[in-house]
Image (tube, rainbow, N blue to C red):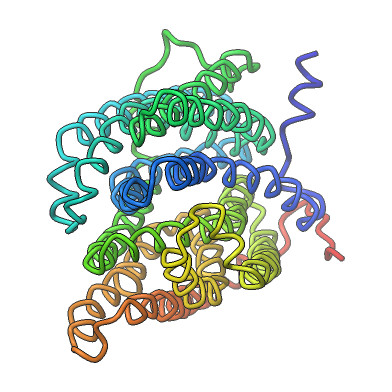
Length: 467
């Protein structure tokens, strides 16, 4: 039974048709990402429908802050994914075993740290973000309860990263589906029947995250060696920690810089009052589904490139990057077009307020129309990160996203005739375009420098073009 299980869920990314395997890998990952976003979407829909616009604004105004606090550790899980995938490609069982237990330990420690940070700093940071006074208390309460579930969130993220490194994206999808059902049921029970408002949706999310974490830990404990998780062996191995930090720390810092610019933008959005904040929050949730569908190919690029890098299969890396760009382009165009066909109908899922709906349509018309640039940029980052270039994407993001958005808010937005919500939204596509161009130039320079190694066929290679 064990060999069949490994064959069913695992995937050899170093051979076979790239497009077919990337789709098989990315589609469950896409479903997992969308289900994870449904945790927050369920919160927003329930409070918007049953608790009012202030509660909707309170929950929505926390998303940028949550991303800011967790992105460093999500980046470390990317590092764990890269290190594990390289070891799978190189077929080094002892290295895989050490990576599994180091990643689990990091998940536990980072979750505890985030819980403490969320409990102690939530209200102060929300005040700094100029959260409207009428929603500040609700937002702080939501954050404190939400962050009680951070240990589970981090354990799930690190455990899923290990499974993805082996080519398994199906079981994380199953676990998130179960957690999503729990989340929705508890949302309705806590808010409608117990009148817990934002505290109810936060508690529902935290409980559902513990369910997902339990499932992924149970899965790893039942795996065959070297992937099997043994509780008594959970510890940080210095060699694996160094590799995870080398890839993951720049990835996490990039996420922090990206989120920091969004926090600054959110604070500017907050200055326009609860209606704009609520509309912005609902629109961001809709955009999130498009983003996570595209982001699946970024994560696929990381795992595919990392396994082939570990196996020394360099010609295949180039094909993986091109295939990833093709997939993310088609996905981004299709989903963005669907959103723009009926934005009002989608926003009505979150609120019945005409003013909030109009505010949401304004954001969607500016942001989702050019979202494809964000997806293309991320796939390029995934390819660079999978081959070991992690500092470079961080620096490019610092300049192209964080730097430009901060400069935009500090200059253009301060001009009286441009002090509008539309001016804020324009900064998104401009920063994506600039950052994508920088990543593209970096990619071309690096691969031109390594062109001889990348193009020479490896011994025993049977690569043929995909059709």
